[in-house]
Image 1 (cartoon, rainbow, N blue to C red):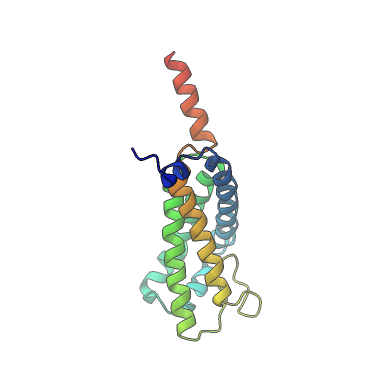
Image 2: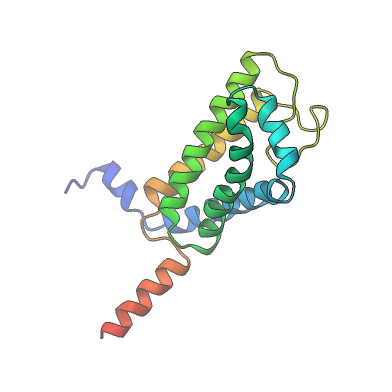
Length: 167
């Protein structure tokens, strides 16, 4: 194994603390994002259709499914269980969201992001800033995925208890 600067960076023990902050932030963002969509899938379906990205036959399925996927990513990030798979899921969603946003911006659509609630283009308009925000969330998810090798939370607690039980 190499002992160069990159290897030392990857093994730095402080990652678990920085990643904890990133995980909690991302988890809360995704829990907030799914809340309205789960309660009002009809309004979210309108937002999805407005992007003009998916075939209309898939809009309702997507609008009903995505919020539960967001919930399934947010909870593990917050409690610290299966955090790397959850971070991968968030990263993949962010890439997909950025593609859809880029498509809508390219088409010149004046619309709401639909990210947190269906509030109309005047209150939550898509813009380059929305893309940059999503890029920041993608970077945080990648940080957790790649560098949070021993996450603080439920997973670490369970591993510690399992190790103690073997003694």
